[in-house]
Image 1 (cartoon, each protein chain N blue to C red):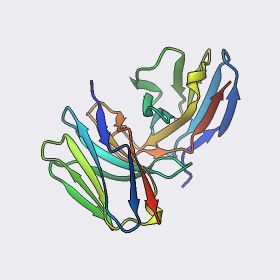
Image 2: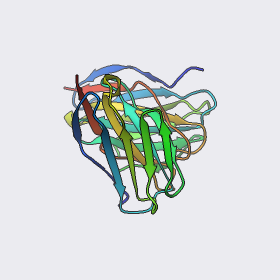
Image 3: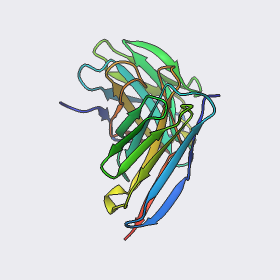
Image 4: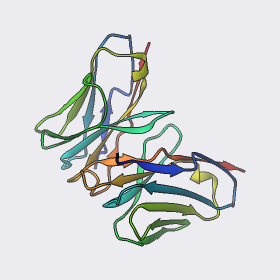
Length: 114
Length: 110
């Protein structure tokens, strides 16, 4: 069974630009969560989607947004990029509810803002 | 707020020595999960603990969930070089999201 696929793997953007990251969960998984990982802050929860509905949101500014499509694929968007947005962005899919069963992580998208 | 504290942040051990990392929450958890992230990799699920006082073993790894369901530990016996990585606990407060601890980076000295 294919794992969680994130694209692109690496991205370099300029301050002020916007970026869209993509996540394809494991087939049959309906829950997708997004995390930001930085050396200083660890894994920070961004948001979680289940059946196209955002059920949870972390403490990130409104510049961070996401959505989920009917096939469970998810995208996250960051507008007006700042240097501090440089991080590894990970998505994770779960069979049903996030936290109730194991989360399968993708390889992540390494975003560098210059 | 709902936070999960994890200590230590770093641990360097001689190969063959034991290693333990601890997680604590100020509020009761529904369950706790443990993940391992190898250098340059992504977190990989190790185990989930649900019951108060639960102890689970996976070969040299022993996981415990406290009686009050507020703390947990991961103990590795006789570490090997393959154990290198960062170990994260992730708490579920019953709100359908995982709150990760800050992780413990394990380095093995051959």
